[in-house]
Length: 305
Image 1 (tube, helix red, strand yellow):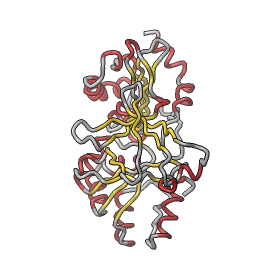
Image 2 (cartoon, one colour):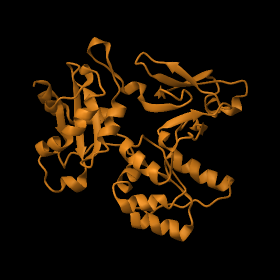
Image 3 (cartoon, rainbow, N blue to C red):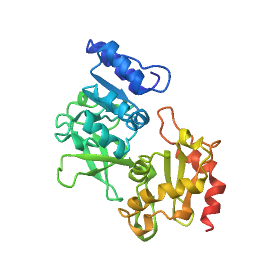
């Protein structure tokens, strides 16, 4: 409730005269979700991606989500492997917004399997501005009627607001846009190749052994991968070498979609120890700068290889 999403959802429930059900103060399980839906008659749910990833890992969890007519998520991207499973079970909808601007007015894509994409409402126009990385940055410009964009009530002196969020256009459906990361996270590699860590991290976080993944570059502009293993599996005292071995086929699949300069080599994969988990925000987003500082020595060791 302390996050802007919780506050907006709570307020929206009042204005729309609908019930707002808070989940338990504990990790949501398939059983507890079924009980909530059964007792309250809830038709839709808003979740954090981490919760959906855990629920989608089992048939029982997918069945619990299927009891809802609509499942939405917000806060950070959802791994494609988890999202595809949920989209086959019920209607999955991506939500996006900013603290300064509230929720963005977007339309639901016609194809349920396009759940990763956004279509902007023409009555709330958004400008997709070219970025040197080859993506487009979402920029909100002041329209004639400033009431259509909340950000200009919060920041009345601005004529435009650069969100820093990068998107790619759907190859066939030009009205659809997929979020691929933040402008601040993009790295420039050798030969003017840009590294977008977001899609790589989401793909790897779909693996059962991975809780969080972070892609970064070292001083030599080589790509590094740091893995925070799933704690439930890590309790089995699985050695880092075995984690890398089991993860490697997925890494190879990811590498096939990357330019040579951005590909991940086996000797540049770090597995975080059980007593050194990733630092994250309250909504579960990884804190890149803190993680880089925490693993500074390990990164330097790998860089020497």
